[in-house]
Amino acid sequence: MIPPDRLTAQLAFLAEIDKLKAIIRQTPLIDGSRRETDAEHSWHVAMMALMLAEHADEPVDAARVVKMLLVHDVVEIDAGDTFIYDDAGNADKAEREQRAADRLFGLLPADQGAELRALWDEFEARETADSRFAAAIDRFAPILNNHLSGGLSWQANGVQPDKVFIFNEPRIGGASKALWERTRAMVEESVGRGDFVVKGARV
Amino acid sequence: MIPPDRLTAQLAFLAEIDKLKAIIRQTPLIDGSRRETDAEHSWHVAMMALMLAEHADEPVDAARVVKMLLVHDVVEIDAGDTFIYDDAGNADKAEREQRAADRLFGLLPADQGAELRALWDEFEARETADSRFAAAIDRFAPILNNHLSGGLSWQANGVQPDKVFIFNEPRIGGASKALWERTRAMVEESVGRGDFVVKGARV
Image (cartoon, rainbow over all chains, first blue to last red; front, side):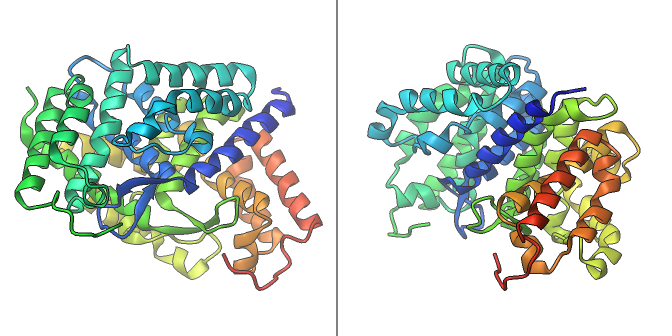
């Protein structure tokens, strides 16, 4: 019989992470109606990992990649979402997220907290095939949604295509040549139709 | 080399399921600020399955349960979300969802479409330990959020505690005695503090 305290700790964590539904990212829904939440993004990248694992250049364990992606943004409950093209916000991101990880994973029974923390540390370090592929999917997802929505968050933030290429080629192309080739094609198509031209539109 | 057409079909599916972010459930966020989306719920139940799998009465494969829960609501893109306490809506739910499954999983390469369809069929049939536990988590999640939000969707829909017990005991208690015991305690606590008393509040 599992001690009831253990379930109480698990439910405290599961209730706390409900707050991930209230964190708004820069990425638009494809229909352009609003920006997605961190929880929605976490679900979408988990589905992407399941469907796209075969495109990883090194073999990956899709179930581990899914688990990593389900957990990867939980720290943003305390640290907030930092837009990848925001240099100032990225300067102290690591420190803010470490403190968040201590608090949030600390709510769980020790063994489970340590397991999720190790998974999140692995994701952040990008030193394994699983974490490199997870990080590639995490970068691929907003480009897909931006491309299909007509570039809404690129326009709203004045992001230019060279920045999209420079920031994303190492992480996406370093884990999947096929996904990078497709990313490049999507961004070039977006350039061709004027998605990067600032129209004053804000999602 | 994987044919580019395969990636195109996968991305068509992954773009289509972005619509799950626009389907609003009855369940409130715990902070009561709004109702959650299907995509947010799918992420939250996947996290619950990971953390709570040890409470299943029969051994389950947590990674399979997670996969099932990530996929379980995708059919609502076409069929809509049906509130469990809505008898009329539940009468033709199965037929609407079958048509939705045909269309949505049909967007994928045949092997992957068949795999997700089989997983979704398994979830719906609840004849395996994995699917019974997934279905229990799917019922447990809205009770947790309702309880912690002060009963917002129970109030908004005039749901009474006896209905919560009758509808959920077989599915939750049939897969996890520990989760059902906790569910009962939460609902009783909600009864005690008046969460089921209709105050005219609407989420």
